[in-house]
Every structure is written in C-alpha cells, then in structure tokens.
Figure 1: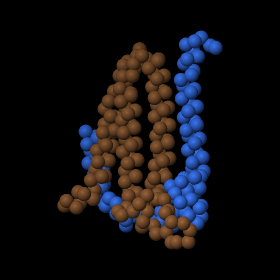
Figure 2 (figure 1 turned 45 degrees about the horizontal axis):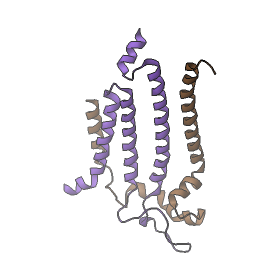
Figure 3 (figure 1 turned 90 degrees about the vertical axis):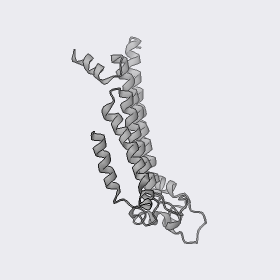
Length: 124
Length: 90
C-alpha cells in the first residue's frame, strides 16, 4: 500500500494542481484570475510530462563520452518530454502574453475586469 | 462540483499509470532509446535535447519561433491601436 502511494503520488499532486487551475478558470469571475488559472493548469500538464521522463538511476540526457563507445539508453533520462515541453512552455508564454494584452484592451474599454460587470455593460 | 468529479476521474486514471521513475515505463521503451543511442553519430551533438530540438525537429522549432513572432506582433497591434485612437490619429 505504501509502495503504491509512493509510486503514484506525483500524479496526484499534478492532478490537484490542475484542478486548482480548472476551478480558477470555471468559478472565478475576475478575468485576470481566469488567466492565472489557465496558467496553473498548463503548468500542471507540463510538470506531468516532465515527470514521465524520469528514470531511476539515470542522469541528464547529455552523452558523456566521445565517439566509439556504445551509448546505453538506460543511463539517460528520456529526452523527448523535455523537448516537447520546451515547445509547450513557449506556446504557453505566447498565449499568456496575448491574453494579458487582450485584458488590457478590455480594461480600457469597460474600466473593469469582472465578467458579470462587463456583461451588464454590454447588455445595456 | 464539476472540478471534484473531473479530479476523481483523473485520479482513477492514474491507477493504471506506470510507476514514477520506472525505467521500463512504455514512454521510455519505444522511440526514445533510438534518439539517445544514435544522436552522437548522426548529429555530433552530445546534448540529446538540443539535437532533437534543433536537428530532428528543426521545422517544429521554426514553427515555434513563428508562434512567438505572431504573439509578439499581435501584442503590439492590440496595445498600439488603442493608443493611436486616444492620441487622435498620429
């Protein structure tokens, strides 16, 4: 039982983090808080993928010795999640930047960032 | 409420996941050993992450830079248009 918890608890932490972001996206009325919730969500996904790269007893994926010797894949952690999450972080930062720019536009136009107040102003 | 249901479903899903840092996890067995073992002779780069990012997936990185470029341009457009309206058309 303890072994089971130790081998799985990292996934549970990411799920808790992800659900915190999801709650922020759904329940909060403030648009800034929604954006931050989305960011926490994406961070949880990135942490999850990075954790799938880990191997026990392995080192970072930089080949140490020179040419001629055989390279054993068991000695290095999986590099592909790292590469893909590098791309995902870039996309995440881009979406965050554009979202904040749009929020600045919304604030200039409606003078508020609360969703219900914006809908009220639009309804009139 | 929805959040709790989704969280419970996801935790149920982790019961089938491989153990943390398991060298025999399916993610570590199929395609990644080939990259680790061949990267030095094919790209002469000791850092596997760099060789995959810039060599095997070079077009992906090119598209990624275009994503950043588009985001930067759209930020500039969004923030600049309003300023021009306020200052009365430069």
